[in-house]
Length: 70
Image (cartoon, rainbow, N blue to C red; front, side):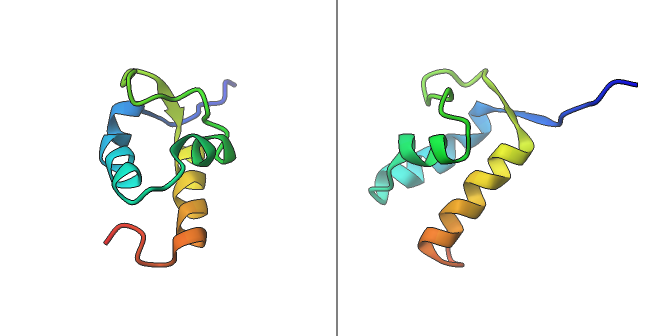
């Protein structure tokens, strides 16, 4: 039986990348903490494991607070 890992394209992170830049958040450091340091805003076709994306959002919410995406 094979394991399946749900993934999402890096293009879905575009609004988050823009928000992080506008709010002077360290994009590269945050991506490294979530173990997706290979993702760049210039390559929207990279596949990202969904659990790593969730880890990125959880880490940012812990740093900023519950109003992360408001």
